Length: 240
Image (cartoon, rainbow, N blue to C red; front, side, top):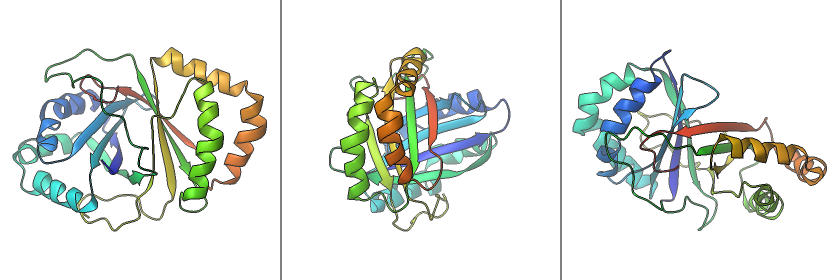
C-alpha cells in the first residue's frame, strides 16, 4: 500500500452514527473486494459532526481502476451511496498521500477486522499530525523528522506508527476531488486510550528538549499551524 487518502467529512448535525453504521455494514468489504484497503474509520473527538477515514492503494493506476469500479460500476455504491451522501455537507477535504520511505507505511494488522454487526468500541485512540511544510516533504525534512522528532516522540510514549507526504500526481479520478497546491507531511500515532494520549501530551509540554530544541527547528520548516486529528476508531476499524 503505497498511497492513502486521508478523508475528512463534514456531516449534517446528528448524522455521524448513521453514516458509521452504514459505512461499517456496506462499504468495507465492498471496497476491499475491488483492491482498495480500508485502513480505518473514526469519529473525530473534537467535532461531533466530523467523520474521518483512511483508504489505501498500491498505485495511482490501481486507484483509478478501483474507484471507477466502486463508484461508477459497483452495486454497493449504487444501492447505498445516496443514503451516505444524504448525511454529508462536505466530502472534499481529502489529502492524497504517498509513503515517505519503503518502511513508513502502516504495519499489518495484528488481528482480524471485527465482523459485520460488531458494536464494541475500542478504547484506543489514533492521532494524525499534519505538518504543512515550506517545500515538498523531501529527504531533508524526512531526515529531520527521523533524527530529531521520532526519538523524542518515542521517549514520550508516542512512537510514529506511519508517515506519508503529499502525492503531487494528477488526480486521475476527478469525480472525487483532493486538496491541491499543498505540501504536507502526515504522521500517525496510536495510544492505548484517551488517558495515554493526555499523558503523552503533558510529558511533551514539560520537555525542555522539545520546547527549546526540536519545536523551534520544526516550526521554522512549516508554513502553517500544525493540525492534530484526535480519532476514536469505530467498531470495525482495522486501525485501532
